[in-house]
Image (cartoon, rainbow, N blue to C red; front, side, top):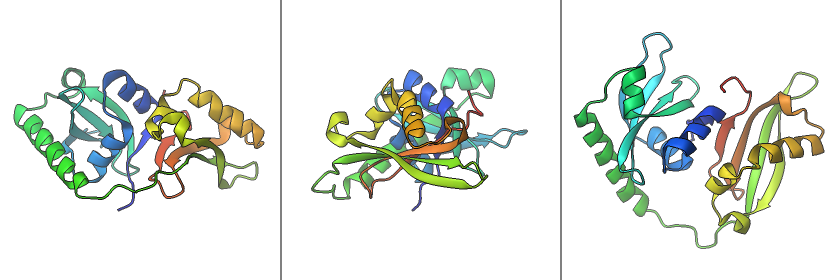
Length: 199
């Protein structure tokens, strides 16, 4: 099944600040039935998904645009109650059960025997002639990041690396639409909206 969930820069920042769960896990829960649909906003039509975070031993709410798959932000339950509505205890129990079921499913697949040796950073951007184009910006040694894409995203120099590689390839950094990071050529890419529309 193709990946639908992707992240705004704002969401990535909030996930890092507020939770111990990684981006891929959140995207998996939203894309593959591991989160509870607790409703939508009446005006913006954004979907609110309740998911369980094992590292934090509690639930969070991811707010997602249902048309594009963009995860706009992730809220702790008390924030969600102040900004939107209270999440029920029964929904929290459902989210934890879905998380446990997803662990069983993940354990039924065999892991690849040889891990990929590179992490690939790609970008989609608007060219000077107005067309959307895609390019590989850079490749990093996976061993430098312990074969973990999550560490690349949390690297303090991640944004400056993107700008530097854009300039190296004569791409205006302000023309970026999105960037994606994947472990190896066949790895599941994690896509991040990069147009600066959400701060």
